[in-house]
Image (cartoon, rainbow, N blue to C red):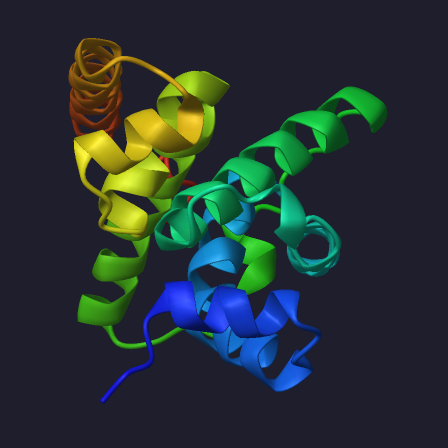
Length: 187
């Protein structure tokens, strides 16, 4: 049986590092996935993920509702990404061709091209749209959870999701219409 967040938070507040380590193991992959989706460089995402958990450890006493740890943690992640973007100069994402230079069978190449097109389309979204898409689909959070994390009304989250989906649809349909030049893959 899994120990509830609220119990682990209370134990962590009492200085129990093992309890906080359990929270870390429970949420580190999700936090990293969200941060990685928001930043072009993996190393920056790794560093920021560590910073998110350091802030969480140091700020546990500021958490009012032990049940809301996940929401609070992702709110820290959102702020850390925003602060990082303000303080660092813009970086160009590494082209997908350089990330994985080994060619595979045709079906794998086609799947990779689709994935690259999707990731490129997501990267082209505004930050507010990338946030809701990443939290909703990448972290499988509900609209209500996203609203609490971003401190937005439910209607705003729903609206941003709809606009982000529309933008992705337009971007991906134009990529399909234009052909392989858009994704950088040869036919």
